Image: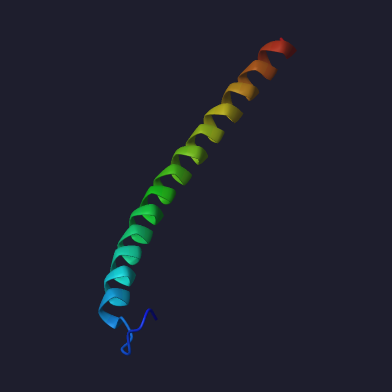
Length: 57
C-alpha cells in the first residue's frame, strides 16, 4: 500500500462510479448496435429472398 495505513476507499468509490457510468454508456451503445444488426439482417434476408424469386422466374 506504498506506506499508507488506510485503505483508499474514496478513490475506489470514485473509480467505481466512473466505471459504472462507462458500463451504462457501453450497454446503451451495445443495445443500439444490436438493433441495427437485427435490422440489417432482416434487409439482407429480404434481398436474398427477392433475388431467389427472380432466379426462379
